[in-house]
Structures are given as C-alpha cells and as structure tokens.
Amino acid sequence: MIKANIGDVILFNERKGKVVSVLQNTVVVDTTNFTSINNNEEVKLVVRHKDYRIISN
Image (cartoon, rainbow, N blue to C red; front, top):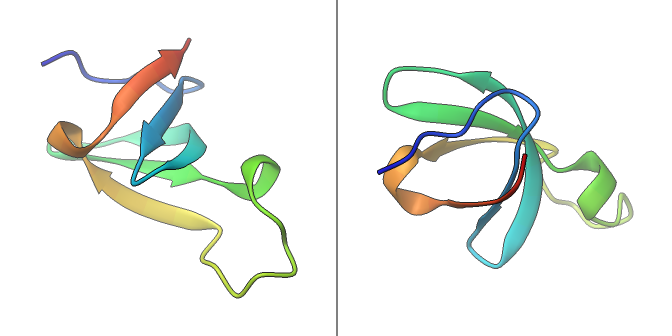
C-alpha cells in the first residue's frame, strides 16, 4: 500500500479531495475544490489509508 503525501489528490467513496495532513493510519482530506459548497457535506474528512487511491501528486 502506497501512502499519500500532502498535496496529493485522492479518490475515495467516489469523491475527490486534496490531502492536507498525513497521520499514521489516516489522511485528512480537503474536498472544497471538488464538491459543491451548496451541499451539506463535510469539507474536511478523515480517510483510512486502505480506503483511497492516489490519482494525482
């Protein structure tokens, strides 16, 4: 398993986000630029390393 780095764009649960923090078992992802702000969705999410795929770094 390859872990994402800060600034990488990842895909998880059919959503995209930019990694803002890398922890031991998770990453914190900012989805601001990839989702509509009108939706009542969380902007920053915590995602386990095994639950995402890196699509751009």
